Length: 230
View 1 (cartoon, rainbow, N blue to C red):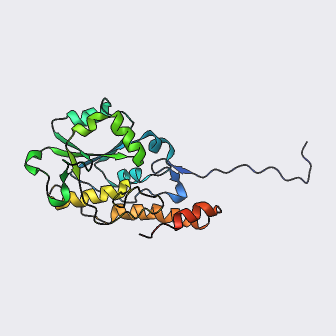
View 2: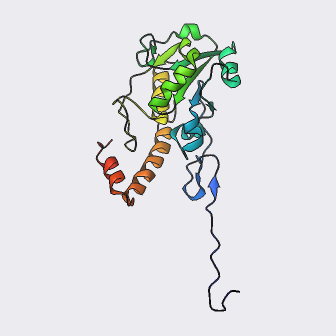
View 3: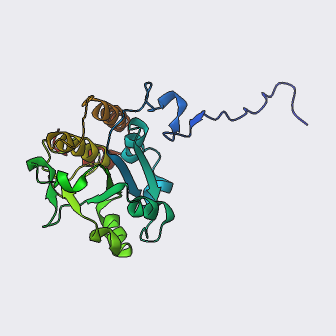
């Protein structure tokens, strides 16, 4: 029996959730304008750890802002039905963004545009941590049989929340931005709104930095704030 003067227990209140960007609705990062069109199809091969455990990774932000893009989650892609459909379609010219020795350098106009012809360029990007990217390449050996493309980044990564293994390494959304710049430079695509992807990225990064400012864990805060500014 509840005492007359004892307050009733509070009913827990749950924040509304956005299932597109996977953030609380009051912190939603979904674009307010339609996704940007591109001739090139951008396909993110997302490691299961990114797909299941990351609340709002930069890969999801990328696809929310690009109309001609998609995410394929998985680890073994050689027999993945959606991956095979894109690779085997004769109307597509599939390539992997991978900086191998034989990769075509988009930054210097090294891509054989004549070979592309009227086909749609489909660029696969591996979306994972660098350690997990090695696992995807190991479990999907067919990826490295595709023609590879690369670019030279115009700037270093601004993602100071995460430590990159090398100065030229970028987050997925930064890599996509640089890829579109290089495709435009090569005459393979147009990139009319060059601030859009970066604006989405900065909004996510700046919120994370704000949360670090009120973080009560001094070890985690020091680890982040000691990294060089962008």
